[in-house]
Image (cartoon, rainbow, N blue to C red; front, top):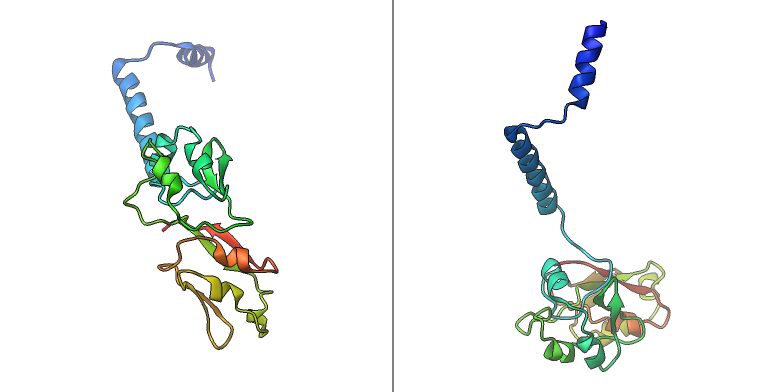
Length: 184
């Protein structure tokens, strides 16, 4: 490369003038790429939301961390997690009483929505019923009749019936049922 070419490249690299067309092209392309990335990603959260919560992006916008729903929950299942209200079903199931929704003034919890925590049971392979032993506590106590075992001990979870109350998890004395978020 000649010395003249080197000076040309050096001048080109240090040149700080941007045309209007180049500026707008850069801004619009960046905005277009950001919009496409945002449209392709579904906003989810690793923790469960209260029953009757609106869609996640709207919930994240509307919930102002006032804590009214936490204080209203008679079973103390709601708590703050990652600066938003989350549902923790470890020792007690949610009976979908609606007290959290009644006190929500922001609209993050909506009365016209079907109560659903979006939690679904995951049954471990060590489950007694699946191993041919007599245990039906989760099936018997499911208020929605969403959990059934076939004659072959294979489990069936009817997601359209399940509302994620967590009664099956609470009733399992061996801890073979866990709950995972499964958006509808």
